[in-house]
Length: 355
Ligand code: SPD
Image 1 (cartoon, helix red, strand yellow):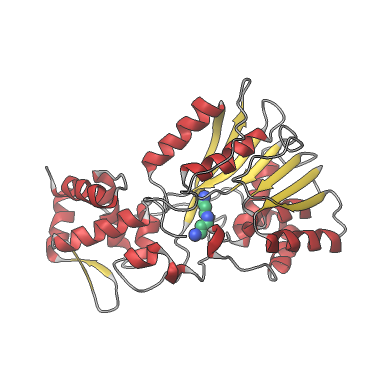
Image 2: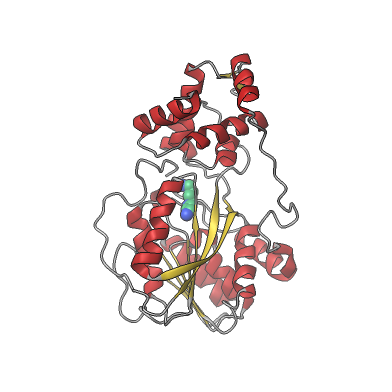
């Protein structure tokens, strides 16, 4: 067995996070590109525990080392391996203007300016609910994406469990939807939205406190054209946010949007998520835009498992936490899931670490 396969196997055994040989190869590519641990994760697209495990294992194999400034670097043995295996640096030719999304936030300058101004007073992210807000550029691009796919104008839209991103507020600000309902567990965000709706005279939008672990009441089931959410990556949260989101949709041909990250879940889990969407819920994935969502760093990082298991103490400086933006559509015979969640594992499991 070659070294990369051995590292993958041992890291998987120790961390319980599923990884394969090419994850190790990609991480070495990332080290050729940056010495910053958090950017290495960003470029490797693997969960933090796996990245930390691979870096530590490659250090013990004499392939990597950490310098006094906590940069992760290749040793001479590492460079020899890179040359033997033909491992190349990570390159990125994605569009810098739209930040790789394909939906430039500046296409609606008025919305962007208004949103940025209002969001200055937003409540800060808290650890209790795994909060970590996306950039204003991301939020506005989400709205433009919805609009471009025919999922905004005169539509009834529910935004669930993701209002730290203020996507429901941004949708409401366009005044193009027929109705907007924002649901979140955090009363601070609900009060913030309701205050802005009142101040701006937006009377077709309302916000309501709800814990998504609880089933939705009947007056929410089957009443919306579009749902938007951004769950933590555990299976319980996937069901509570996305299963319940699908349950709010009126009929076939309705759509749902959500973010899924590879920083807190593996590509193996993505396969299981996708199987659940297709086989259990009866929906189809129409779009996946990788790295669409850019999250601003959160103040509680030093308290997280991610910080504890990292091979460096230096906290992230730039944006490193990103997620893909999914769009799904219901098909005839789609199933509405609205069961209670009793699972203890809601925000964190072996693959997640940033809460
Ligand atoms: N705890 C870090 C911030 C995480 C924000 N949630 C991202 C969910 C992606 N589906």
